[in-house]
Length: 315
Ligand SMILES: Cc1cc2nc3c(=O)[nH]c(=O)nc-3n(C[C@H](O)[C@H](O)[C@H](O)COP(=O)(O)OP(=O)(O)OC[C@H]3O[C@@H](n4cnc5c(N)ncnc54)[C@H](O)[C@@H]3O)c2cc1C
Image (cartoon, rainbow, N blue to C red):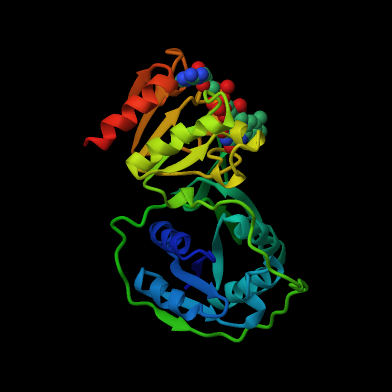
């Protein structure tokens, strides 16, 4: 049976791809296979088999350490052959974005990247991705017999996914990486994982100075939220790039996104469109963010935030 093959080095994304891939595969008459690569990948393989993949191919070969794109693409191409894959979904993480086109080249396949929606239609797959700076969504099909899609995290949900009991296989893969790691250093600055954050306070240019962001931090602290920002604040180097939300940053899907001093330009809001609840504080009642907000507060953040924090402390 031909297969839809899924892979991500991030286990959460891999589980989402299994969940979404299962539905697409059912519509296309394909089986679902998954791949787990790298030293210690056995645990992820078991998890993916339990998450509903029919077969999980695992290789703990040291060449996959750190998931270098050349080795991973070579390994995936070999697994795709073994599995008879006609569709490959790769998680569009930083590593996945590098891997998917290399894999497509090896398979002679067409590739769509930054996919944020994938549906089965008339026996084929139609991918959605943002175009024209996020102003519209393009629908794209791949014409080659084998198709590769790099799918953004959170495109599919694992909610309601049906557990399975797939088999785990350990093929021998012939891979080596031309990347030689000479040193590993921790990235400077703080790190956040906005993708997984359930509560986010988004801060924007409404803050007049870097020090004033302490007000946003206090609000986030009172809510138990993570601070994300517009690209403008990262461009000012007030916050790190890890905190950018939007086209050039994280595509989040929190329970609550509270935008403060954020105008709501499309390049930012594509990163919060998946939020369950959107709230905004802005002194301009015409700010575009209010058009998508469930709750809006027109006011000066310098007055609103201290009052809000005070109130939250007493809840
Ligand atoms: C190719 C491309 C990619 C991009 N990618 C991204 C991206 O990934 N993420 C992103 O965020 N942006 C991105 N941008 C930039 C984006 O277009 C906007 O410029 C940016 O999001 C605006 O940031 P902002 O809302 O902080 O600032 P502004 O648009 O300047 O808005 C500031 C808001 O603060 C309000 N305000 C001012 N003072 C106060 C106050 N005292 N109290 C309350 N409200 C106040 C104002 O009314 C205004 O609405 C991209 C742009 C391009 C061209």
